[in-house]
Length: 222
Ligand code: ADE
Image (spheres, rainbow, N blue to C red):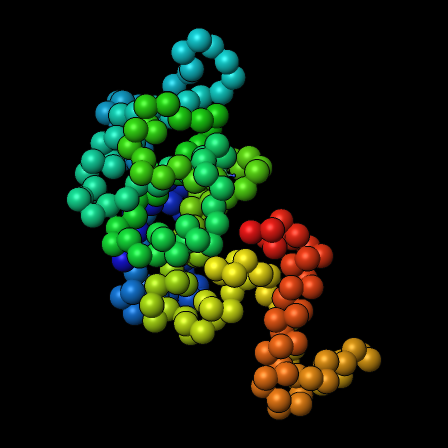
């Protein structure tokens, strides 16, 4: 898979993509990630990428030209273009699975007060990572890339996907423990040390339902 990210702040991505699982996926050739500063595409002699809103109002609005030219320079027939915006479709694990099957993603990070409405015509998907407003699309795009890359076959142990919270059965994850068996008086549930795998699976399933009921009853309704 190839992922191209359009941003005014490529430096923000350094720590996130240069560590751990994403780094290994890149080194193993499972994913190629390119950062494009769309300021490099502006035709404005002073490097401007934004302007004041028609009709007045606060803040600056990202202009069409740099983003259109940047997308058009990297887009192919296989590309899917994603626009990150708080008014997009709420991002869910199901969407992460869907996007992990694509060959090429182009992710546009908005910034400032917003972007020119006509930029939306470039997008195959408009995505929001939650009902809150961030300063830009950079952190949301990191969230997307992380959740997608871990689903690419061979990036992590695939059994982990089946057991993930939010997989198709809409249950939160069951609790897990490691050694020691007792820590500051808190004991690991006995069933987990019993070696009885049928019992362990049943306990985990029941716990997942119990936790989901308590924390996210809306998921159980599905
Ligand atoms: N840009 C600013 N806030 C955002 C959000 N919640 N999701 C996606 N993009 C955003």
